[in-house]
Image 1 (cartoon, one colour):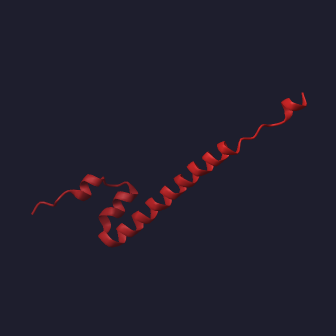
Image 2: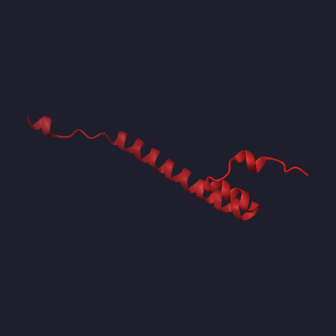
Image 3: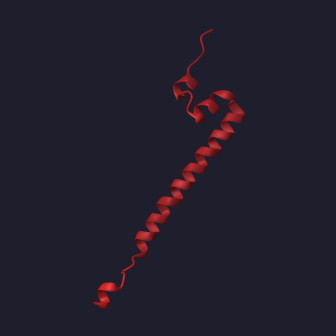
Length: 65
């Protein structure tokens, strides 16, 4: 009964959880800084893309002259 109450803890599972969590945080920060940097460099189009107002196809479209 005492062996049943002891929790068998596997550090590998926790390690894989933390590596997945840290990679998600890293990708989120990378996307955030990408949006800020490209909004400053390329103007309002990428800012609207990051806010979800326009799609990437509208940014890449060549304007009619």
